[in-house]
Length: 103
Image 1 (cartoon, rainbow, N blue to C red):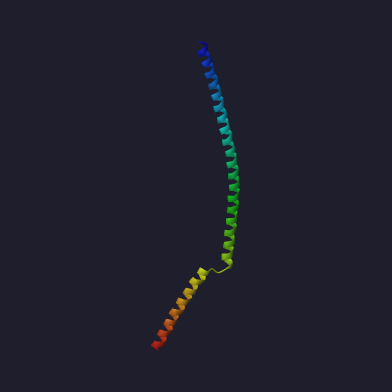
Image 2 (image 1 turned 60 degrees about the vertical axis):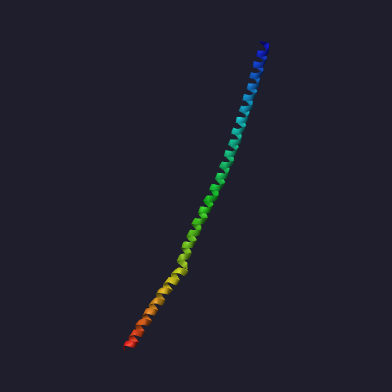
């Protein structure tokens, strides 16, 4: 009976130590997870600031592009209008040639 009591007592002491160890491990894991969440929050705040700055820069560049398009003549627009002028000249030359040959 005395052996059974000491075995039971040592088992209960071992179980208590094991439970304490598991609890300490869980508390340590919770602390680590909390620290990681704080770090992630800080990184998110930094990224949010960068995104805000980038969006402001993009808006500024878009405004500048709009202002430049008002000041300068676009190459595509110039090429299109030059093509229209060339086709007008070609049609006028054709009409003149037709009129000259008809008289």
